Image (cartoon, rainbow, N blue to C red):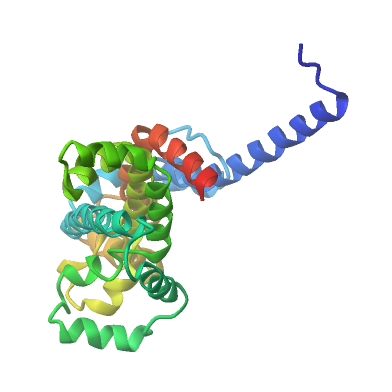
Length: 290
């Protein structure tokens, strides 16, 4: 029978308290924005810290559904996220798999060059001229390719694949399987938790990215969703004001901002629960083998 001492109980209590407090601090901004996206502006002025609205109005959401620039941003962000994640996972697998083999010639030199890119890069101006010289300026490729393969995630994936027993590959090789078959039939299925983890990492990164769009695009119809949200928040709500001027609906600019923030972050939040079991397993395996 496991008898816990008093110090263990105090330690658990403090842990629960700290974790709960941290979770509430993380949750507070989202709940606050969600509450005031459906609260009349007069109620907000009267009770600026009330988390549960007494009157609920969805006028702001009805207005943002009419914003064509928002749907264009959604389209661009979905293309960037889906293409970026697919390309990232493909490149990571076909690079990490050969690098996981200790008998690969030049393996250490390749790993050294990859690690070098974690600490040094060409910088903003050289990268801009590189993108322009490759005719990718003002294209969505300029927002997908620069971050397609990260050195840190590649090294983690290489370590994960290296932890898979070599006897499985040897058995498949004796049965006549070539390297591509081993990668597709053995390595990829066994790497599902790690792949799911990197899918979440890269999808969240791509969904929230906006800086590359500032540097590599000058056309507004190529803007990702987060750059439109930035334009709304930083540039005094230019997009929201245009909508309000056109609609004259009585919805305030403040409520429009809150609704757009929720509308832009909700999809990536809804995806997370479906990937959570793979995500937690992948993180645990990576921590043990890393």
